[in-house]
Image (cartoon, rainbow, N blue to C red; front, side):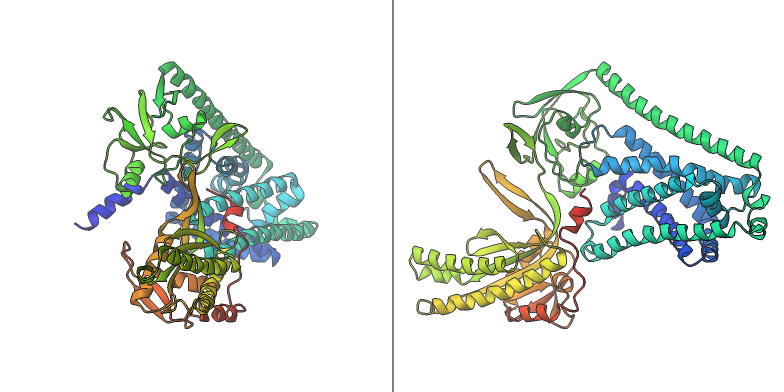
Length: 589
């Protein structure tokens, strides 16, 4: 069966993170629905009541309700499990912040859930917006602040999770401005709706008829019933804090047992040896002892940069988890001696060496580890000089070098003038990067204008060298944008800053295609669309890219000089640009 390997691969790729993501998306959908319902308070309390009818009609539909409560319990359980499992919190500040926010939500929401849902189940209370707003604004104003904090914490926690999920998706650079606007507007409108509705209820509550209609025994319950609900909520809250205390105690017991159970030695193959308790992963051991260890994804088995090769007998090692096996299979590693340091938890002494050496830099005389790379959306521009081989055949070597240097100088000048950065020089070709200090849309527009500038500067160079060239210098340009890894690549003193990733490779392939397509530039439709150029601005083709299963939509540019005018013409109709480095300012993974 052809589908069997695909299904098995999907199962192996599924892990705790994927389950947490699915549950989180379900809960965040509920939060959005609830927030939008709150926002109706800007119209009237009656609008809030009308909206909550449809809200409950959907979420209390039995199959949906089962899925929702299962997702809530699973998400909570995985959060508590993460508190127990995580041994090191040095990856990034945002991760422990997300965990703390998530674990604080149950304690804050317990009273509200018990008062509304359990009150309905036990006593048939019909607490809707008038009753809840009366509680927050008249009967117990202190609870309003608790509910406001809860709403903000739930929203921030959910937004962090959604960002981690979407930030590497191809559409994220274009969707980021709208997602950011929604992330700000939805909670703002929700809180304003609660305030407006609360003020209305506060004013109307002075009327005796309103009280008789909205504060009946069936709607708010008796004092004894509410005291019972408060005791239940208090008991569950204490129980929840007890569970967290138990988890923290379990962490302490685990550390004590690990020390009692013995220590193991990890030898890094370079003379460095550390002793750690059994149960730590190799990457956690490296972090604990400040040993530099490459890890782009922060130890979540989303990359393979922490790979190590075990020296000696690897049969005694724990069997790779499904997630580890999936990652190793994806990178084509069948050697059982190669493992992921973030997943391998040795139970005996281990010798190994790292397959990726982390970048080192000195700070006050001490060597510390730096990130091997950073995920960013960049636009790659490849340009190559045509006919350089024939040029070299008929000229002295120094004359050829002179002409090639003048060509690369003209190209570099055009790139710099348009906000790009010349990055790699390979013979008579060059890679330029756009987007290091600009948002994706601006980077795409800069790259297109740089291509036009390159054509103009080469025209000037041809005129300057006309007495020495039998044929004018020709060139080919390929432009593509996407998520890449940027960082320092090299060895010892020979380290360069560059970008690696599929987007860079595709740009190089597009540059090669200018020969067969008889044009000066080939631009991916992704760049054309992000730059805001009209769909009919350039002829479209679908081309096969080596190493890719599906064809890529590209735009063929016969004369690169026209690109500047197209970009300028689309300036008024382009999509609004995002702020510089938007993804990095929100957070990093």
